[in-house]
Length: 230
Image (tube, rainbow, N blue to C red; front, side, top):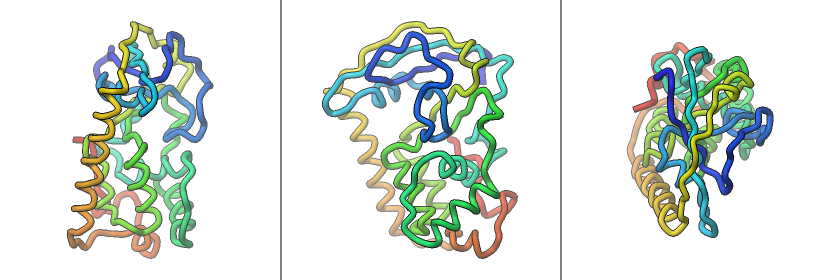
């Protein structure tokens, strides 16, 4: 990561001064300020079918920040989903899913609060559905890893610490028009879902969450996909 980066926050409002400690605790990685390096994605995330939004632009000095990149080869897809199930509210439909949540947190979770800045997939819309299907034993770990790349639905940058917030500088905004960017957002999501359905028709012998539980599989198992970022 470059020492000075430009990031964007998609929102229904202009955010000149992000406030440390505000936000929803049930976001992907807990409390934090959620951004992206892509202005186009920020515009898509900013709009709904009913309203326009704003892509707020910031510069961030990362030189002295402790950065966690969950999409690096140091981590597996299960590290990402363990962090996710620790913070997001999942639909637990089966006894397997209840055991899976505890097992993933105990064996794969990462203490995100020990870092200033986090990079990882954004579990919104289809992404969240894929993750939920995995913990309910509906898709394999390889299918989950592949699903996270579908449609390039988004990688987010999350500012976690008070120190990181102090290094953030507001640079302005651009307007995201719903008539343009909601259409793009929906098309991206639809494309991902179409590829996902096609993927489900393929046969494979990868591990399901129930196999991981029964085998007591840990993070160093070579069957767990690494390097999930393209």
